[in-house]
Image (cartoon, rainbow over all chains, first blue to last red; front, side):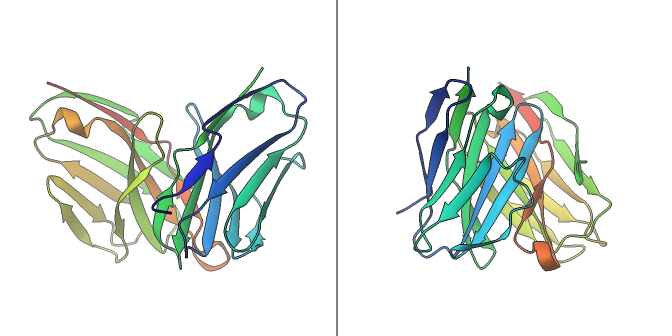
Amino acid sequence: GAGVSQSPSNKVTEKGKDVELRCDPISGHTALYWYRQSLGQGLEFLIYFQGNSAPDKSGLPSDRFSAERTGGSVSTLTIQRTQQEDSAVYLCASSFAGYGYTFGSGTRLTVV
Amino acid sequence: TQLLEQSPQFLSIQEGENLTVYCNSSSVFSSLQWYRQEPGEGPVLLVTVVTGGEVKKLKRLTFQFGDARKDSSLHITAAQPGDTGLYLCAGVGRGSTLGRLYFGRGTQLTVWP
């Protein structure tokens, strides 16, 4: 596609439920990144994919968070047993060989 | 711990004024990027600076990368209301963290007509 597409754009979930966030990167972009943006905290790195492998998962805040990427394209970020502190905007970005970073519009997650 | 410190955090100015935003770090990065983000959207890449001492101009915006590749500044000349937004600097990691972005907390700029 022309840009990075994220879905859903907004998600309200009850505490304790699982959620899945999807990212469809720019076609041909080999690298894919997930970031989290909370009010006053800036963008926090979560995980990085090169192709289908994740050489850097160091930003995942707990074992409730996991992500996968299939076919070198679409990625899914899963949060299990959501907590209120998980409320944030989750942003996905893709790039080719570390250049041309393009972000999606994000998924705003609200845990009530 | 925030690797990149941005200042000021908030900036409110009148149309036509000049401004500078600073981005400082104790770490060396392979390159540094500046982004602009509007409400409800993801950050949009404005520029990447790679070489120490580099200066890049994008219309009324001037970006500088420090000689030691640890700090950067963004200068806007004759600001316009359309420049309003959140400006973010991001250092690009080296070695094992190559490609990973380390963001500052951002500078929220408001330009009044």
